[in-house]
Length: 221
Image 1 (tube, rainbow, N blue to C red):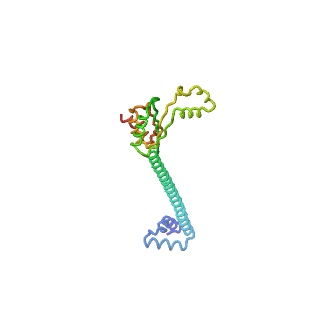
Image 2: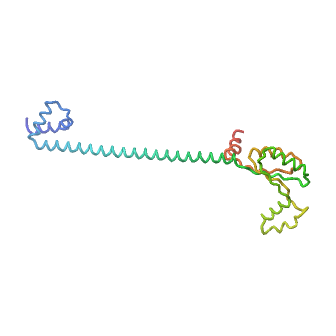
Image 3: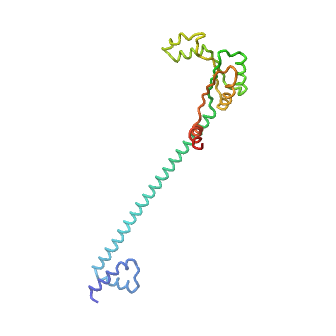
């Protein structure tokens, strides 16, 4: 066989030779040819070099891909961790809000008629104490309320100089501090009692109650 044709045949099957998929006869033919043909040896070396470079390139791509995957996983874990921390903080804050609005004392002012009797005052005090003996009660006279009003007006308190004695527009009152449920119960009871002119309660709804009363209740109704 001519040398040139033999080279063509060998070079055509060199890749299969490198991949070790030739039959024993073909492999032996290639090896015998390579022993005496520098040209085909160079071709073989180039094929092996290309394969090696391709392997390295694939390995680098695989490493880059794994790095990207790892980066995404780390980012996802960080987001999950941050979300978990935020969720825990929200839960703690909500627990704190719930506890605060359920253990806090609220204020109520019971304004009295000018002609209220001593007996009517005692009945009011007894009703409050009967609701809860731990409720704080503070009685304010008309004169004390006028002084408070003057204090709030500061430099303009001289405008109230004519409102003394019988001209005093303020009302004597009881100020109490109690739990929300006590305030709500007392408000209904005291409004119907003799000697009570009006009742003002300062109850702040917790956010859950506020949401229900202002939004959810309107939706369902």
